[in-house]
Structures are given as C-alpha cells and as structure tokens.
Length: 334
Image (cartoon, rainbow, N blue to C red; front, side, top):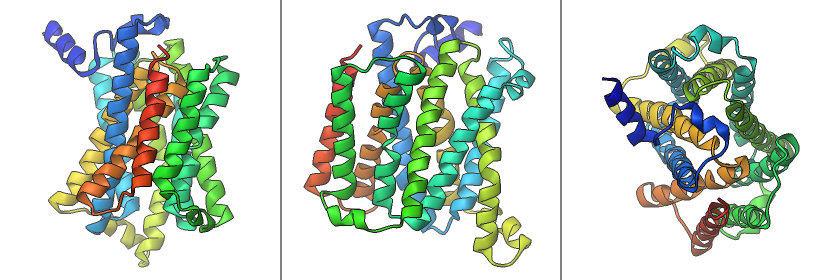
C-alpha cells in the first residue's frame, strides 16, 4: 500500500515530492526542468480560472460568494490532505501555530482583497499591467532578501515579460491607460507588491525546510480564507441590499454550472495549482517562477478568445510570443 501511494505522488509531482532531499537546494537539471513544467501547469490552472470565473459570473454567480466558497473548500481540502499524508512529519496543531504561514496567508489574502477593490476603480487592462509588475518587485526582493544575483539572461526575461504583458493587455492601444482612477491604480499596484512579497517569502519558507508542502498550503489557505472573509461578506451584504438575510440567501448556491465553477476554482485553481507551484519553488528562483506564472495571462487570453468570444488582436498575439520568449530565456538559466 505504501509503495502504491509513492507511485501516485511520483506520477503527480515527480519523485521526491515529499522527500527531505528537495530541501538541499542541490537540484539536478532534470529536477529543475520538472519544476518549470510544474509551474507552467500551475499557471495554466490559474489562467483557466479567469474564463471559468467569467462564465460563472455570466450565470449570475456573485463574485463575493464565489471567493468565499473557493477558499473555504480549498482550505478544507488542503487541511484534509495534510492530516492524511503529513501528520507523521508535523501535527496539524503545529501548522496553526506557525507564524510564517499566517504571514503568507495575510499577504495572499490582502492581495486578493486589494485586487477586487481596485477593479472597481480602474480598468481590467491597467489592473493586469500593474499586478504583473510583481515580476520586477520579485526580482528586487529576491536580490535583497535572499541574495540572489540576477543574470543578464534572467534580466532579459523580465524585460520581455513586461513588454509581452503590456502588448497582450493593451493590444498596443495607449489610450487604454488613461482610464481608471489613481486610487484603483494604487490598489492594484499594492496587490502586485503583496503577491511579490508572498512569492519571495514563500521561497524563503520552502528553503528552510521547516514545513512540508501540504503544511505550507494548508496553513496559507486557511489564513487567506480568514483574511479575505470579512471583505467578501461585506461585499455580499452591500450587494444584496436587504440586510443580513441577503448574506445567507446569497450563500445558498444551486445549479450544476455554479458548483462546477466553484469546484474548479477551489480544487484545480487553488489546491492543485498551489501544490504544484509551491513544490516547484523549492528548485527554481522566485523571479524565474514569477515569469513562468505569466503564462496564465496567455492561457486565459487564448481560452477567452476561443470560448467566450473575446477578441485577440495580432498585437496581443505578439505579446504572448514575447512572454513565451521570456520563459525560454529564463528556462535556459538552469
């Protein structure tokens, strides 16, 4: 039975996923390539979340309700996996007492809240650009906090990534940058900064080897849920317009489509994506990871174009190609 369980984990995430050997930092080239593949798959799951969420919103699903259920189910699932597979390493009570996991959850939850509030006051285009500036923030923070030296190849990857995001988001139309407000722009910029801190601090956490992947994910998602919950409930309350009863009635979700959206975002777009990404972060630099995560912008644009009828101009395709080049540049830095 134990051998069968090991085979399952090897198929999902590669040999050594739960092994302490990955903490050494001396990872083979195939190991790093597998980490890049895991990061790409995670970004694909996150990227697909955007058109899936858009589909759910078009069906009438409240964004506040969606986020509440997304992180509630994700936290419960991650916690269950932790109890089943990692209790021999550290008890679940120990996870709740780890301050660094609550710090990770705080910045992750704060980033989500800032993003949601900022979207009310600015455009989706500017939000995408400002949030994805976290690539620059990550590069700076990783150099300061972890002492990582950025090579020319990685630096070129950062430049190509930013240019690619700009073209994919704006499609070359500079007038799109004039809309929105300063307040919304600042919030989106702070969201990007919060996620940059989350990425670098997560990198520092996995390098210490004090916590297993499930412990990090379970602790982070639980903290994320509690940090974002007050805002989400307040959003549901003011959106309902009929007092506290509107919150409870809104949380009563029916319909296969609505629950399909909730389950995809919680299982694939949260637990599995965070699991793959966190494990991969043990083996590659944070800035390399952040560049590969931009693939979610490309995948979201392609799926939205194919299934939601959204446009994708040639300039946007050029932006996607530049992001691909950025991923190629940094992938050779192994």
